Amino acid sequence: MATLRGKQLAQDIRQKVAALKQVCQGVDEKMALQAPKDRWSPKQILSHLCGPEGVGHLPILRSFIDNEIPMIDLDTENPFFTENRARMSFVELVAECERNYQSVANFAEELTEAQL
Image (cartoon, rainbow, N blue to C red; front, side, top):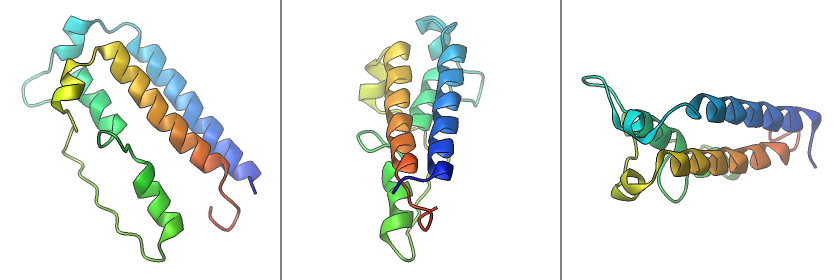
């Protein structure tokens, strides 16, 4: 059963995604590919925020619910910038990021008080 805390968490996630989308509106394709020396480009940053291609971050979050002792394998220095994502436009990456975090928000929204 959904809780007020879960719904609030989901709302917070959706607000952060809306803010991210607003920041990304001013980024064109040329700017999206530029990266300072030894830094990630905006496309790589978005790719990192999307998480592993095809699964996103939801499996890690589900492991907290599904396993008594979850195995959390974070790859903090991996931008998950696959060939497929490199071919995507910046707008498409923003949309993928939004879909990923919408799944996370939906997951949070349905958590019980015990799960939270």
